[in-house]
Length: 157
Length: 286
Ligand SMILES: Cc1cc2nc3c(=O)[nH]c(=O)nc-3n(C[C@H](O)[C@H](O)[C@H](O)COP(=O)(O)OP(=O)(O)OC[C@H]3O[C@@H](n4cnc5c(N)ncnc54)[C@H](O)[C@@H]3O)c2cc1C
Ligand code: FES
Ligand code: FES
Image 1 (spheres, chains in turn brown, red):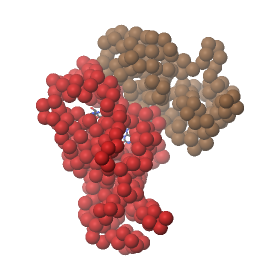
Image 2 (cartoon, chains in turn red, yellow):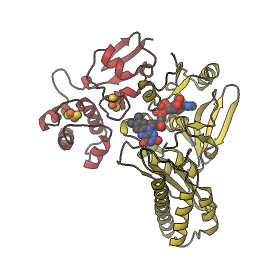
Image 3 (cartoon, each protein chain N blue to C red):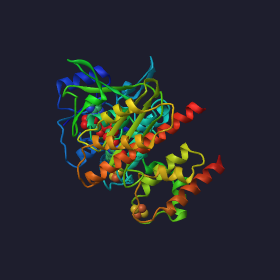
Image 4 (spheres, protein in one colour):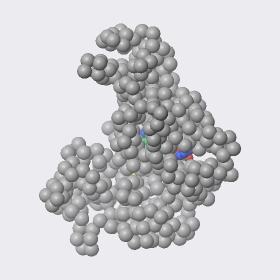
């Protein structure tokens, strides 16, 4: 089947989509957007997190056909040209990235938290990131990065 | 595989009647896992995502009617006061991403004994509204909905439209045992709901029997013995825990042993009733 939807502000058409295929597969394999990662395909790791109509979801658990006519924003859609999003900058600065596999999902999920909650507490951050697994960093530097990004965002307001 | 996209409830019922083997999909947090892992190869997916009414809820004539596809995140944000037991249980489901998509309708459709919405639905006395094109509407009390492990009273041509619950008239609590505070399937879980007007206490057990179920004898015991104007008698509390544990019929599995589950149900039952009772007494004193 054909699926037409908006990805990072541009209309995209994917053809020959199998009806049981996930949104994640379409993004990575059909639209050439490999930013969202495929690690577990069962909602456990969060590395495939994307915005669907403004809400963060696991792209591996959305059937491609469910995205028809909807808006998707992936990690590729956060930066403006060469200017990284403040969350991405903070991750790089704080050393919150090691192998980087978990990073795109964490960045999208943290981006959403900071949009919704002005000054997130540590408990808010932990709760928001509870569905994103990282095997490398031990999470401390990820927490640092989210705190930094949130503080900068609050200062810029 | 077909991908069916009804945009109205009538269209959805017609599609299900014409093709009863079509698998409904809402949040997809159960369905897609099964497809990704090749556990299930449905002949058709019936996407309910464009049936807008399924994502709405109303409060009228003293009853809350919640559409099958309202995600957990919205139950937490919008219905925490009216349905506190269900909102507490919703907070424990998966992760934020899962709660943004997953729904009570999907939890009912899956009818897993470990589903977290079931104990609070049972304790608060929810009714499930299902319908089919040819059979019309059926209102099924939660206690009659679960028939076996992942089996429910839903017929092949039926869809779940909503569930109905009275807004809480007393304290409600849910508690769940798991290895982590997020992303856990319950080892076992328990919900309690006080109905002070009727001097009745509702219960719900999760992951402790082939189906979610009430601890009916424990409820009847409290109905007889509980003095609603006094402190909670420790002996009575202990007996309540025992009767709730006796209502369980758990199994040994990777998440825990039957003996542990029975023990934990007694602990959760005592704990949640104590929390609820403290609120009840506090409210009366205030
Ligand atoms: C990582 C992860 C963690 C999870 N953690 C939990 C947890 O902590 N607690 C918990 O209870 N569950 C958990 N789940 C399971 C799942 O999220 C829940 O069961 C959720 O409520 C399913 O809702 P859904 O809308 O996504 O259902 P879907 O996957 O869309 O559907 C589930 C089932 O219901 C049927 N169905 C859906 N809508 C209807 C309808 N309107 N009428 C008839 N049948 C219908 C489907 O055909 C399917 O059989 C988890 C899942 C994942 C992937
Ligand atoms: S790949 Fe989607 S959550 Fe792991
Ligand atoms: S940086 Fe390697 S998984 Fe997180």
